[in-house]
Amino acid sequence: MSRWDPGAQGRLADAALELFAEQGFDRTTVAGIAARAGLTERTFFRHYADKREVLFAGDRLAHHIAARLAEVPSGVTPLEAVTVVMEDASEVTTARADWARQRAEIVAAHPELRERELAKMGMLATVMAEGLRERGVSAAPAQLTAEIAVLAFRLAYERWAAGPPSVPAASLVRVLLAELRDAVTSTCPSPTAPTPP
Amino acid sequence: MSRWDPGAQGRLADAALELFAEQGFDRTTVAGIAARAGLTERTFFRHYADKREVLFAGDRLAHHIAARLAEVPSGVTPLEAVTVVMEDASEVTTARADWARQRAEIVAAHPELRERELAKMGMLATVMAEGLRERGVSAAPAQLTAEIAVLAFRLAYERWAAGPPSVPAASLVRVLLAELRDAVTSTCPSPTAPTPP
Image (cartoon, rainbow over all chains, first blue to last red; front, side, top):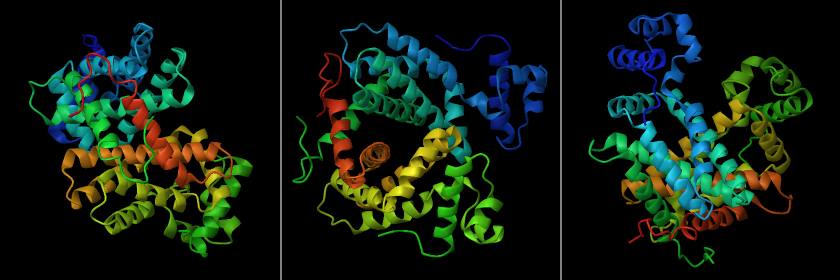
């Protein structure tokens, strides 16, 4: 289930994370990462645009999500479809648990990386909304369902990274969706709020 | 209710948007914006870090949101509290309707600006979650309610900008919250999904 090939890309990712942890993200250079991995800078740039991108598999994840969503049987509700896909994405993302935890820590500590993370999540939401529209869901619910799913995915990953290793990230997707449902439902019957149909 | 002072800052914002519309965002320079506003570059940089920041009042909006949330009476539910605050924020954000619509168009057309927008929204969610915790809401529901509220705010702004001028952005916040609730509820009773308590 790992999306890391055993070759250059994985070695670069490992080397980068080691160096980020040892000497900090800011002080780590692409040259240093390549050297640690026993590769050239040129090889680095064949795989990643810059040192930040080592931490973001957004494009690959987007392809993965689009492919998985297309495979979900057509009778499944939109929310259930995105839930299944986000569970799968969580599994893929955290397959190398130690790496994924360290990554979460580094991202959380750097505003520019948190910003990049949110941008990648925005891209995933767009891809997922497109996938839902291809399943016949109309534009507005497709967008909203996709946004909710990606929010649950992001928060599940954050909670997984902060929690005990025994809880799989995929299992937290439904937990987060239930909590989001509570947040938007249980406190809602205030006199002025519209009631759901 | 406008957050634009009649002085330099507002003139710079107007000048920037005019130039973005006339010659494109990429080809507009800080020098050009300052010249159009009849001000110096130095004055520009007293108000904004760069030309992108003219489009983002995130910090001011965050202060505004924190202040408004603190004013909401304590008996109000967390969701109702954030709804009221987001309605107010929508009003403030779209007070100058033409400006706010043009801004939305420019942001939508530039990936780097969409990224910045998402980052600012992330900051608003953090500020709002802190405000909810100060109201006695525990950490997880505070975060989830804040994320939902900011998502509704962002989508309400997008829908407002794409829709007829007669619909106020503030009125769309509850509409979007209701749709988000539908997205996460009505399709949800699938056999494997956990039921909320």
